[in-house]
Amino acid sequence: MGSSRTQDERTRTRTRGGGEEASSSAPDAKSPPSSTSTSTSTLSTSSALGGPSSRRRSLFPLVELELDDDGIPTTASSIAVTSALRASGFLLARTALLPVSLQRRALSAARRYLRRHGDDVMGDADDDAVDDPPSMSSSPGLSRRGGRVLTHPTDPKAYAMLEGIESIRDDDDDEDDDDDDDDGDTDGGGADEHTTTTTTTTTTTMATATRTTTTADLEDWYRAAREARIALLRCIAAGMGMGNDDRDFLVRLHDEDNDSLRLLGYFRGDARTGNRCREHSDYGTLTLLLNDGVGGLEAYVDDDDDDNDDDDGDVDGDGGGGRGYVVVNIGSILSDWTGGELRATLHRVAGPASVGGSVGDDVADRTYRESLLRAVSVPRYSIAYFADPNGDVSIDAKLVGSSAVAGGGEGGNNIGLRVKDYIRWRSGGMWSDRCGVAFTSAEESRLANIR
Ligand SMILES: O=C(O)CCC(=O)C(=O)O
Ligand SMILES: [Fe+2]
Image 1 (cartoon, rainbow, N blue to C red):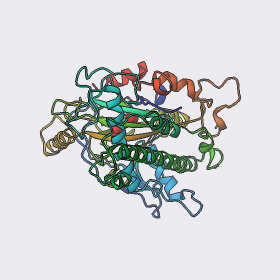
Image 2 (image 1 turned 90 degrees about the vertical axis):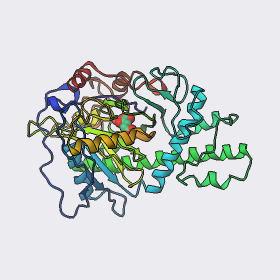
Image 3 (image 1 turned 45 degrees about the horizontal axis):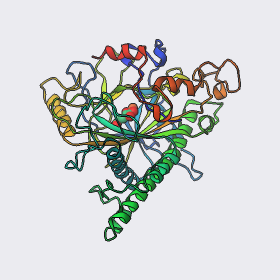
Image 4 (image 1 turned 45 degrees about the vertical axis):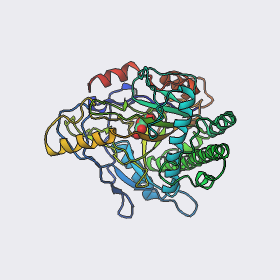
């Protein structure tokens, strides 16, 4: 199982996962101890999702995810991760588990993958626009199904869902006799050393090498993301005191490895381009997001302790890719498990014409608008790694507090909705059937509030 993500919180209306009225979800009162390596990152001034033009610079913490000699996250890291997820639901994580070199390789591989498989599926990719993800020159608003790369029904993007590491290899096996559109692209980043070493060989050999490298790089990223998932789940379990301080409490609820990679290629646009990715929140447990540094990612964050509706934060504008960190956020299942203490935050990839975007005329507005214009003038690539819990775990479990239910009621008859059914419902299907566009009516109405 993996995830194609859609939607959830509308914090402005003080609601939390499942549409319930929020109880208390004030940011963690504990400030990280001075020994923590947490710092804040420099972030672009955000546009407000749905607010007028007032701006606030929002800083999400950059957390150095440190492991001890046994590979266990330090206490400082656990506190830093949990504090950020309480406060905003977002953090930027830097960790030796996801080194910059691997990030670059993975992004290059995603780009190659989307272009190759997109061409396969859609057949009309723009050959001149070598930097662009595959697009459909006709009917750009329609999703064409049946291949590995889909165009999104509404957002100007192509994407591929890779459900499990094996799916990457299967894709390559399927392609063994298909070399006509494999361009051996080295992505200008010099990241594809295997391809580079084969440039003097025949086209066919080079194509094979490119496939192999693409597969290897995506597999490496997938494996590394799984390790990072384990570390982050340990941080959360420890930081929240779950399972009587059993640090592997959450890890065990994920030992089926129900995860997926979504490779995303956003098309170039112009001043008229609105959202490149519609507002949504993720609905599994944990998302690790790597992007190529092209801006536009925004998160809608609300302070519970004031009435300002415009406390929205641009997550990064340069998330990963260059500076070596990944964006970490959580989905609604984990948020619900914690009674909303950890936030599944609404986010999007904005374009210059996004609703509630930069409409004012002060310096910050203009600067931000220019940054979005620059961002949309180039394609944007990202890789989302989604972790879901084991399929039979209850999404209704409460994993914090005195009534915490280990395993979410596993084995019981009255466990409520199971993860696998919930995800099927949210995502509009399982596996490659997922369209990733399902919105519940509650979510739709929350979204309507910001339009
Ligand atoms: O591409 C991005 O930066 C955001 C993607 C995202 O939020 C998602 O796919 O759930
Ligand atoms: Fe997302």
